[in-house]
Length: 624
Image (cartoon, rainbow, N blue to C red; front, side, top):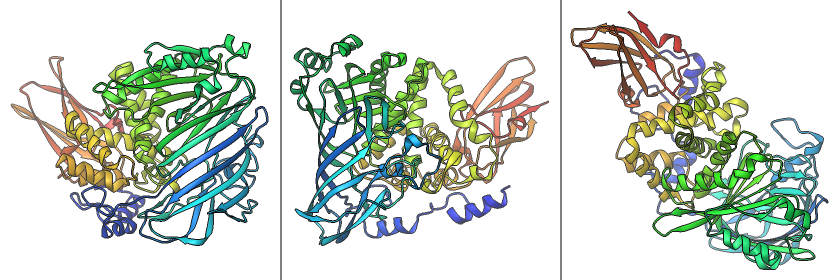
């Protein structure tokens, strides 16, 4: 089997050999989880599985155009682990804005702020010193009294920060329009296989959060509307009656209701007089985000996501009038929630609301999306669908995006393609997927592109991070769907999601769950697609015509077990295509002989991969 030197070294590192049918590489920390029975080799949570959680009560004071935000929070943190915690690690993501912070790219002056500055901190009512000067995106605080298993600790924190002028995943969108994300000090994840999550946030990788309960209050000046993760508890206290009624009506409406229009914004009669405190609540959720504006239109409608219970979900959009694609954004959101709930993954959208905000991040949050304006309606819908798909990965299940990006981005990319077939037709969806998700990887022969997908994504950057997390991973999931067929694929996927809803699955939990639920040993597939330094590259080595059949010998140069079609073109001008699933490579080393019955004279044979693009298509055709 042809491999480069670097490929051989990487394969030895991750799998130990090149043979098919072997056990998957399992890292030492995951083996310990099996020994401790917090996880199992069937893919199920172990009998001793645990995870920590907290209750957050957050109060914010926001006064645009001033970019200074003041916050205070009460945290009740519960140690459900079997270990005594002598310290707590806090995530302070906004410190990535501080001058001198470690980042994977350049930052403009408009990106720079002083980060999160802690004004006071206390444990169980006792104040402690917290010096913010040298804080990074992690802060380990030693506890005065160690937190025993099963115990709770009450934490109180006051802080302030400046919203950055440059808007991306968060920041100032317009002068009086802010998108707030990662804005509060939170206790980091402490889990069963890694302990404290102490990864530095460099600005590119994403997040890993516990499932917590939140109560949020946001105090803003008169005329400002607040959108947030969670359910609005006091609409009639903050909105004039006319607009509160519109919002209430939208909760049962299929048609879009324009709650706040440009004309309404000019009148400045939307909210109650004076400062208003908007109150929100969200339970068992991994994060919160907030948008604030006195310049944004507000649209809303709803959609049925569970046909059995007839449960409806609110779909809202907040946007500036010049962003023409956002005038249809509620419709795009309704379509996405309906499709994902009833087709793939076929699990009813788990929250009460989804709000799409015109920002700059193209980024997902529980119940919230922060998207650019893209001009072209199809592109705007495409991006919205991808971000809404993240509801299931990583929010329905709390995957570690920082370490295993392919567990959320790969699935969102898979769902984006499947709904795209519905939206624009299979042929156009295939071309779009190839152009946007595959060709930048398959046409790049840089050795970095051969790094296995299982490589922790926190140590990757640039194109290899994006390709491993998005296109390469999604191609594997779609090849799995091709192997299992629609019915079994959906059963296995939903079974895995049911096992790990509200928990923290890792890749081995996924691989072994699919094996267990489908009843198939797919380790050969996982190993070759996710653990080895492979790429897609097939070659027709030989074609032999017999009286009643044609034999096509295919060489797997790249090692990836991708599916493809064999297209035969006959002397009479007709043609025939035969689909070959990835399973042909289960027991084959690097070549496979395909026997096709025909008594017609074959003039040409072509391998056609569709979305599974070949690195060297010129050797995919044989002519007589």
